Structures are given as C-alpha cells and as structure tokens.
Amino acid sequence: MFAARGLAKAPDKGVLEPTQVLSDHLGFEVSTASLRGHLKVPARRCSDIASAASRLLHHASDHRRKVSSEDLRVFVVKAVSVSACYQARFRL
Image (tube, rainbow, N blue to C red):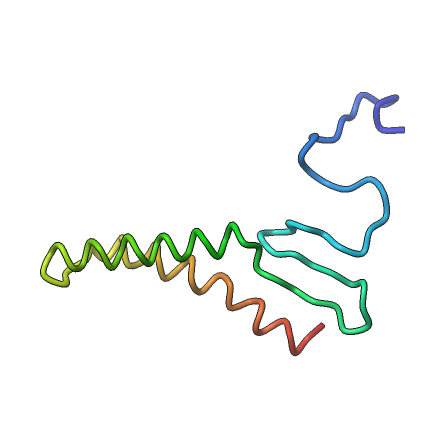
C-alpha cells in the first residue's frame, strides 16, 4: 500500500506486523503481552550509563575530584532518563 504511493518505511524503524513487544521505543522496551505489561531499559542504555559513570569517576580521580559541569550534566541526563521506567510502573 505504501510503496504504491511512493512511500517507504525505513528498514530499521517501525513495525508493520501487529506486536505486543516493542524492543526499542524511545530507548525503552515496551511490552503489553501480560496483564500488567512492562517497561524496561535495554542493555545498551544500561552499559552506556555505566561507561559514562566510569569515565566520570576516572576523570575525577585524575583531576583531584574535579569534573567539568558539562561532563557531570551529560552523565546526569543519561542517568535521569531511565527514571521514566520507575515512574511508569505505577501508570501502566
């Protein structure tokens, strides 16, 4: 239907078949397969946050516990972004 009208879906975006699990929707895994459903943080985001924390700690240890506000901001934004999972538990 889309191709006939000159529209194409990006190969790595969207799902054409009905599904109860979206593996990467706005950086989260969303499932409605069970009665309660779930919202998970994918492993790639967890490892990204862990490596950002490690880089921040190494930088702090090398520079007398001082880090730039930009480095701290980048880490905090990544860490806080996963708090949506904990808030969503009460709303699903």
